[in-house]
Amino acid sequence: MLERWEPNVRMTFTRHPDYFVAGLPYADGVELRVDRDPSSRLAGWLAGQFDFAPEYQQVVRRLDLPVARQRKPGLQTVEYPWLVTGYIGFRLADEPFKDVRVRRALARATSLSEIFESNAFSLGQWVPNPIVPAGFSEWSIPIDQLGPEGKKNFEFSIPEAKRLLAEAGLGSGHKTTLETTAGYGPDYMDYIQILVKNWKAAGFEAELKLKEYGAFISSTIFGKFDRMMAGLIPSYSEPDSYIARPYTPGSPINILGVDDARLNELIRAQRRTAEVKKRRELLHDAQRHISEQGYFGVGGSAKVVTAWDAHVRNYGPNNGYDYGGRLVAAWLDK
Image (cartoon, rainbow, N blue to C red):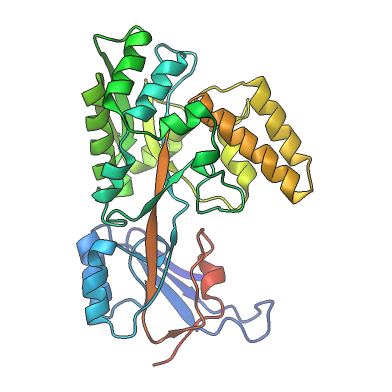
């Protein structure tokens, strides 16, 4: 139960005396601390202030992993592809984004390898994603099973991006704005800077417009932006959410304004299909269509490392938001 909340400082939870499973939770309480500085978070963990790695989902940045292993004997770790991935938004009804060649050009001008080579969470360890992230392996379509144009989107090529832009009438270049937030942290901003640099090399120049995080998540992600936006796709526990929420007409986060008869049909069909194999085929078809149309250009996820101290027992990571479920049966052996 939430016992105390100090905004921007900490949250303190205490054991529920009437928890529905007898004997659980084992821990008497949990304290979550808020620290916006990655270096300060790491220092606190190494100094023994925390029992878990300090990043989102108890992840330790690969950049920091060697020193963590050295300073914390018996450190327990699990590696897995993150569900977190980037997302680019625009309005299909507006020029130049109504032209599929422009959407494909942005994908071809995005170097995922450069983005993840420099990322402190991945250091080159990553997987490419269609709209359903590869970490959701039961439902995500392998990149080599996308359609011809969809597969090409993942082949970084500035010359091809320039050719597509020229065919779309933007051979002399194009200037626009890209709205985002620094609230996701410095590693996210490194991703944005590489993205903008790649696009500029192809002749598509995006001026960054930064918003305070609270304003961004209350406005921009719901389509209140000028020309383009960049953000992160949340971790969902159901594949329908990755295709229905951003692409169904009337959805508050269908910020592209997609109203695609073929895609609408596939979304409805997979919702009505109980047989797993058939539903997977429908979801794969939907991902092919989304990629071919350039509604989702290219994305990738770091292969992250969740870490917890040697004295933590009966714990395992969860690639989602269920912090309580992960900790309900954990206990400390110290």
